[in-house]
Length: 96
Image (cartoon, rainbow, N blue to C red):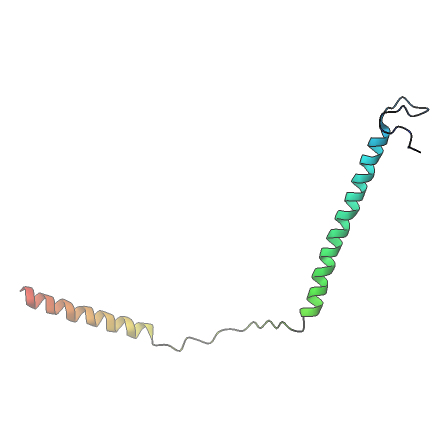
């Protein structure tokens, strides 16, 4: 037996026509809302579960770096300037 108003029958006691489809649409809307809510809850549950599984395997360490142990940058600059002065002096003597 069909529900009253399916799909274009007059519903007894009302002037409405076709309320069966409207009711089905509302039910589908509620179903989609529940499915969406369950999906979001599932995502949150998966994230929390993943964190609980991996929290013992991941270690985060925040530490200051030691000062660089390479050559002194000022000494490198002095060496470069001395090399340029020597090359410039050689060019002056050859041109001049």
